[in-house]
Every structure is written in C-alpha cells, then in structure tokens.
Image (cartoon, rainbow, N blue to C red; front, side, top):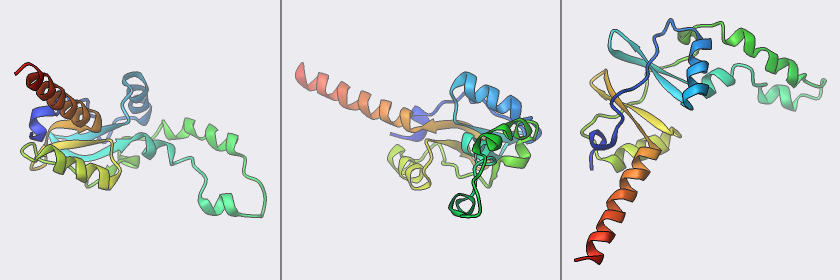
Length: 154
C-alpha cells in the first residue's frame, strides 16, 4: 500500500506571510495540529501548534532556577503578541516530507522517528497531499477487516 493510496489530496495550506492569528483560528476550528507552508506551489515549511505555543513556554532553566517564581499566567498572556506575528517567524523550514510512491509503513516509520502525527506528501518540493497516522491506522484496519470478512465467507 502506497502513501498516494491513503493521503489527503485537498490540503489546507498557509503562506509565509499569513498572520499566526489566522493560522491558530483554522487549527482550532478544523482541529488541525499543523499546516504546510507553501509559496508559489512549493512546500517551504510547516507550522504546528507546538511552534506557536512553545514561544510562551518557560525554559527549563527558568523552571529550575531558585531565584524566584515565574508568573506562568503572565506568560500565557503573551499569546496576544504571538498571534500578531507571521508564519515566517515561527514555521519550521526545511520540512520533512515523503513521496506519494513510498510504502505506507516506511512513511510511517519516518513520521514516528520525527514524532510527527502528520507529514506532507511531496513530489520533489511540490505539495501533493498530507498523510496522518490516523490515515495509516484506518487503511490498515480496513485492509485487515476486509481480509477477515472475505476469509469468513470464503
């Protein structure tokens, strides 16, 4: 089974100049944890919830410091400033992608090794789809359930 057999072809994308506020609205509305960043049809990056949220997280050094307490609620209020920025400021450049003709399990291994829940599918550097772990699970489930049903009635 190949990536192209299970990938989503109609993918929501953003440009590097998109305001983060618009991105997080789409993420929350559509329950998407990450979006590909495309410029002139070319995949140039990814922006994920973690890219947005980690901007306000305290560092380990801050948390371990004995010099005083950190006002974590005040840090959460910094979100207002983050959403005014552009995707270009927060995106991960040099995105990891897989080709559509790769076997699903090989692509899944790449995803797991990078701790991704979804990965762009690209031909060269042109975005052609997205594949999620949910897509993989559903395809494997269907394949095995269909096989079990066929063998029961054979």
